[in-house]
Length: 236
Ligand SMILES: Nc1ncnc2c1ncn2[C@@H]1O[C@H](COP(=O)(O)OP(=O)(O)OP(=O)(O)O)[C@@H](O)[C@H]1O
Image (tube, protein in one colour):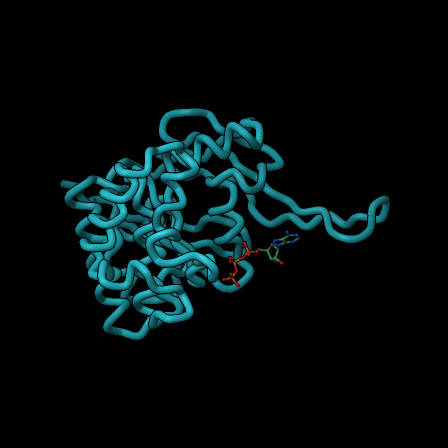
């Protein structure tokens, strides 16, 4: 589903002409299969977000090849990446990144608008999704009128509204209390089992790592165990 082959990444920092090159990821070989939940752990600064940003095309690798959903994406243009993301990727973040001036309904609806789906189909899909996540009654509320857990569910609704086959999540439970965390992890497990959604979760949290089929560790930009803790895991 996602395959990285000999991927290296370095940032150039400092003023033009006086840049300093900072290598961040070294020779990453990683294969995430369809229906897997993979947790990525590692200290702050080890390169976790950079890895996720490479998988989602927000940055390009300095060298190496990246395939997502069986397509080589390493050299897609920005416009092609935007379409590719809409078709294949969903995102979850620690900060919910809801648009404050839009209601819960409008936030969850946004990817459908971008995809050009008609208004009546949008309404049906959004209300079904908000219903499934237990926040339909807040459809007309603005993010500032919702609790953290409710905002997270609206944000999850927006991530999943196009039924993406792959979801990339950066500390998705980072700002949730333990009840809301449990609920989000249960949603992730159900989606994985029912729809076969593939998840890549960056986390510092043991509870999150527990639901993963595989936990891989980044240390100073090196992938220590590409096959993860359980080489013999089975995906049903
Ligand atoms: N745009 C950038 N320009 C220059 N250096 C960057 C940039 N983004 C990240 N870095 C550097 O790359 C390294 C890895 O950063 P990254 O955000 O991937 O780490 P992380 O493991 O996700 O950390 P955290 O757990 O704190 O979020 C860090 O040393 C960081 O300073």
